[in-house]
Image (tube, rainbow, N blue to C red; front, side, top):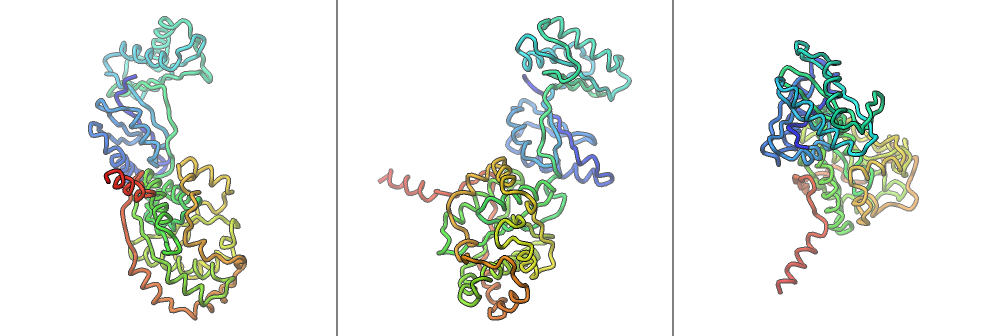
Length: 410
């Protein structure tokens, strides 16, 4: 089927009242960036939907890209027919039925909506005329009003007929960037990329903050985190990745803090550093992948003791999800297989065998008094590296590939 455009429906954006125009404008910008590899398309955002005119570009490739753009409720590949050529509408509808219902005995229905009320045929007239034409051409099919195998939609608008039979579920949510910017604390595990995905779905622009501790954590561990950011960039566009050296802080904590409070004090430092980066980069909140009760540092008491270091909102999109639910989302967004690769991150290298599950905030503050907090944090911030990571960008095993190429040349 040769489609002329893809019609995008907004869903939740339609509830935004006076701000609706701004939301649609942001969605238009996000779709324009996502479809940059398709130079022939033209995008026409309207109040109730968006028209992506294909001009010969591949509709299937366009739709695969739209699957990753938040703010879309549904979309349909469409053939637009001139308002003066009703006979062509019948032909297009028949072609769609032939494509979707190749087997005798399958059922179909014609569903017409008419916003151009001055058109000479009303809704029932269009349904009957198109339906009769298809029945004559395909007497082996059955007309069925409820739950047919194929539903051909005909929209009658002032500028033409829009004919489609596929309605595809979009990514839903709000366009990325409509809810401000936040910092996402990205580990190398399963949970934080899922939290990133869910934050993006609510319109938040995120920057990734990753702590690494060489030589205790390997280059592969850092590259794994970068590659996870690349997976998330498929939903956000290029992602800012902020890597923070954490070795000195961890070594100092290991030396001076009682074992049971190692994890609590470590995470307090991580949160303070993330908050300082947030302030520098005009972020509004901090997101992480904590799930209530999943591990020792994620009990409510632990969260309270860690949150004590800031008044910035800390948002936990996966807080109430079971691990199996988080894994299901991770598989859906293609981060699970990467997340489970065995490269330790800095959260695990000094993990005590019996961390405090109910740490006392006053004790955590007391143990920190033995540390030069400000000096340690300033040295860590001085070593920060910031990069932009593109969707699908690869980092793991690149050195191996280079070495292989060199050996083949020798």
